Length: 107
Image (cartoon, rainbow, N blue to C red; front, side):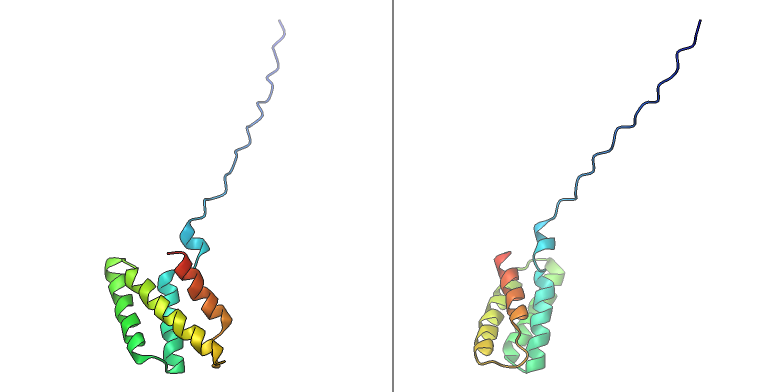
C-alpha cells in the first residue's frame, strides 16, 4: 500500500481591513485649535478678554471634556481673524483661518 502524499494546505491569506478613521482624526482637534488661537491672539496682542475666556475654557475643557465653550470661543476668534485678515494684519494666515473654520464645521 502506497502512502498518500500529504498535500500542503495553502494558508488562507488574512484579509486586513484598513483601520476606520474616526471623525476626530480627519478634522482638527478643537483643543489644539483653541491653543493655537490663544497663542496667535497673544502674539498679535489682540482681544485680551477673549484670550482670558479661551484660557478659562481650555481649563474647563480639560476638567470636564465638554467642548461647548471652546466652540463658542473659536467662533468669536474666527470673526476676529477674518476681520484682521481683511485688514491684512501680518500674522493672520489663511491656514489659521481655515483650521479654525474646519474645527467649527466638525462640531
